[in-house]
Image (cartoon, rainbow, N blue to C red; front, top):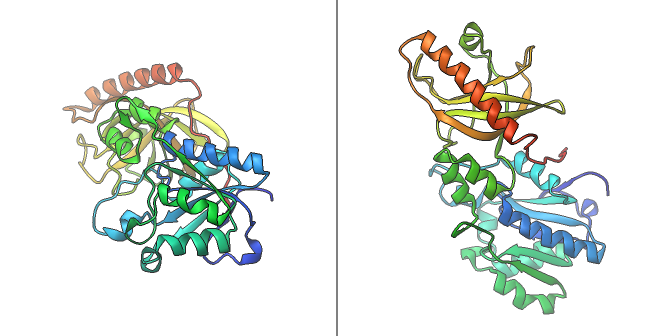
Length: 322
């Protein structure tokens, strides 16, 4: 088996490697708690000389049950898969979460999906993972079923940050409040976004700060403000400073991520960039003059360079997903 394998509901049985050990979860953000589960899966797979896969769901079940509720995802599907590949797994089983799957009992899910279709040898889950109709499946249920199924089950305890368990919701809250250091600590690496560079108003170019502009998901609740960022482009990393917000000095328009790459010249339009958030610099604000704005941008850049130098090379480990 070569490369990171992605198995979906329509993948034929002949293309599914049987006998894997799996880590089960939603894995939004692939944070330190998730990585403990993945680590247990990798250890089990190594001992058994078996492939190690993640089993995850798309869309996030919360989106199915509450389609109209705002949902700030830490990673979209592709970003999640790239993080899972970077964590050392051999592949992922991406199961579509729809009405049929929501109505599947935990017992049927284990038997049909994990045993019959995948032929799993072992399962690793977190202490709070539930699955199946009415969330009837639990870690304790898996442990109880394991002997009869002839599989090994590993349940990982919570990983704490301060006085609370690491969780995707805690990371969302930290990002919404601009607490980048806390989010990075819980994730185990900087939070990142990926997007295509689009044309903007070209104001940054006129001010001496040409920016690469990216529209983030409308439900992204990252705090509006100025950030020190690290950008990946074509296998090379660049340091930079970014503004995420509504540009109150100019138009107070729709939120936009505007990134200025230090020591870079050239066009980026149409290119896809990965942008990792290293430090929060300040809140977004309105300036009374262009001169005052440019002076502040000069100061922002200096502060961003200092923050990036203090955290040299920090970037999430991303694998290749075809």
